[in-house]
Length: 320
Length: 290
Image 1 (cartoon, each protein chain N blue to C red):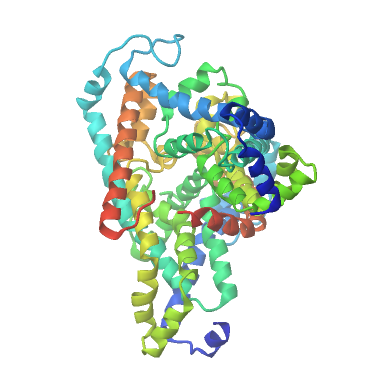
Image 2 (image 1 turned 135 degrees about the vertical axis):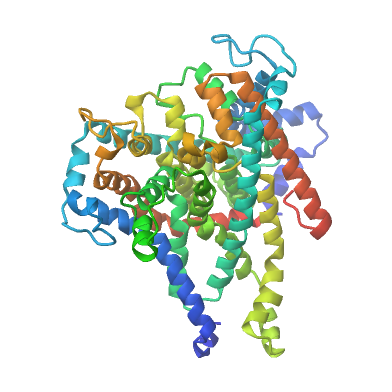
């Protein structure tokens, strides 16, 4: 400990009363409390007032009577959406899309990171990283717009290719329900593979080089080194990432889905979040939409904590 | 490591890896090249499906055209305003908040940290947030874009961790030299934390630049940012020019759409490599805690 802290501590640890000690604390640190003031008010206002605003799920909303509703209706709105087939359709769509997305887009960044880690040419590796992170910074609107042009049935690159090589008739990809899930999942692959791989690459740079040298001495092949050294070393990172993904099962890329949503693919593209948006902001049925949002939020918290608990039991890894 | 790798033979496995990597590289880049080619091609070449990766009938008409539309220019201006204003407010709030929260001896600091972490797992949700912003009378004003999203818990935690890593001795020396906490934050902590702050600035600026949904639900049509402008062109709900006669989707030429895509993405593509070197450093510091 430095002299200055020692001096400060000596002042603090006198025989004086807690009250005078507290006075001295505020006298010394009041500026830090002042700094905290505005952001704290902002934080509580914009993060916690909406949290308590969820009370609207149990209360009737009347326009102009504040955001917390007027009178209690108990579980009325919950009963309403539980008996609403549109809700169950959205619930199923959310789960199906989420699980398929995890099944495809969870392993791909790991494989990509493993392959990139094997690239020995340092400059090429840097270039690959820079280019593959970039799609993450592109707006969803732009991604959807580009896909719209590439997938266009009349002049899109893909349909032209399919027609000239395989003689397939033009497919209206963005309108047909069958293609909605593949389009969503592949656009996520395109946008986030490189970005997610950063975390695995960072974990790989942390592996002790001596482990590879030992494997070399034992005569391990390159593939064996990946299998027995690299993958086990990043296993804890993989577990944590999986927990995070499962925990966010109910929160898909809402904005992207809203952009891809058309009446003709709504049978598969209507997820919980788009349902909340339509019921709440389009039909202005605020209480019902809040109830659905609250339900999905609570399920989300349960998912995060239980997958975290499970992972700690199974592998000793957890995020908190 | 390097010396050894140079001695290595170039095996078939290497060949395969390089082929896959080059494929990935092309998949990342080709969509932009295609957009660029479309935006620089003549309408007749596009209609006749002649354009693939190089412009056919090279011309800059579509760019000239979109720059002559008053509503495109306005949307672009608003995007700059939201990005610059929103990022400045967010950086100020996050830095100041993170600095105070990095001091564990303050009363209530632990409670506030718990509240921050809790709100990452359980948030207010779309409708309560919307109703709050509407009740604060922010809807329909530019403040609905600039103020509510200033504090991101993720960025806050990155910064708190970064500030905690600054040795306490530096601050003690500064106090002895007569600096107060405002001075320490401004003259010592912020300059020392440039990589972390630049990372957060990048994330925040990208968030504001790319936003369209908040614009859609909180703003009036004439305040729309460029991404919402693009979205409305794509789904055919907005005419490109103010005086455009037909609002039909098919009348909006692909070259025009592509030109809007390129111009609205260009600032990010230009800025990104400059800031990229910061964010790897900034991110790894934030994630070490994990």
